[in-house]
Amino acid sequence: MLTTVKVALLLTLVLWSTQDRKADSTPSGSGPEYTSDAQLKRPEHYRDWIYLTSGFDMSYSPAMQMGHHMFDNVFVNPEAYKAFVETGTWPDKTVMVLEVREAQGKGSINQRGNFQSGVMGVEVHVRDAARFAGKWGFFGFDDGKKTSEVIPQTASCYACHTAHAAVDTTFVQFYPTLLPIAKEKKTLSAAYLKEIAAEAKPSDAAASPSAK
Image 1 (cartoon, rainbow, N blue to C red):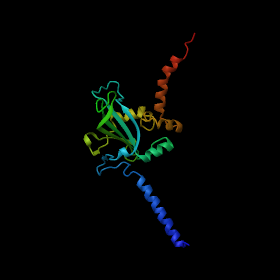
Image 2 (image 1 turned 120 degrees about the vertical axis):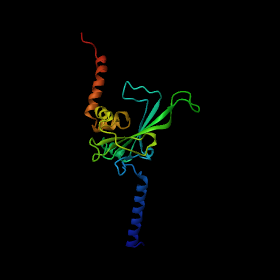
Image 3 (image 1 turned 180 degrees about the horizontal axis):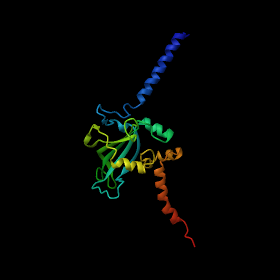
Image 4 (image 1 turned 135 degrees about the vertical axis):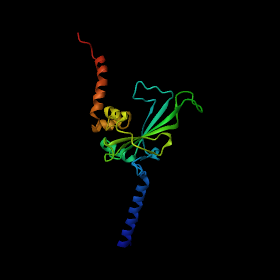
């Protein structure tokens, strides 16, 4: 028969084993990390994070002309994703990565459409309320840079996200698995709700019979 001491030791070993497994399953370094001079370190293992969506030749400017095709892929750190699923909004220390990749049409057996190729650039959107005046900061990691200074708040990307983003200055309207959560949790921004209401009016008017 096990003594009380042996039982206690056995329970302690089981607890340590469980904690070790939990630690191993948590991605390391998934929050924002900065250098001593306040530059953001590029998240090296973002492709181990939660994948949200991909876009193809997306542009927010009707005048923008590109001489090539490209894909963009969006990833978010696991802790932030879990919080969003539970609350419908992003917690502090959220890190979102936009990975831009070249689109190719010819290769191997492919005859139509496009597939993803090399990385053209990486952009990062960080929620850090203590560090940024508007809670969020943008960073660019072109040409393989390992660190980046924050893009100034006067840049057009901040105003665009504030005016059009579905949830807390992030384009959740383009994330098909998260938009339903934001609708259910009622966390959609007033600006986005106004925007989609305005978009719906022309179709509503066309569907209505004319008055006689």
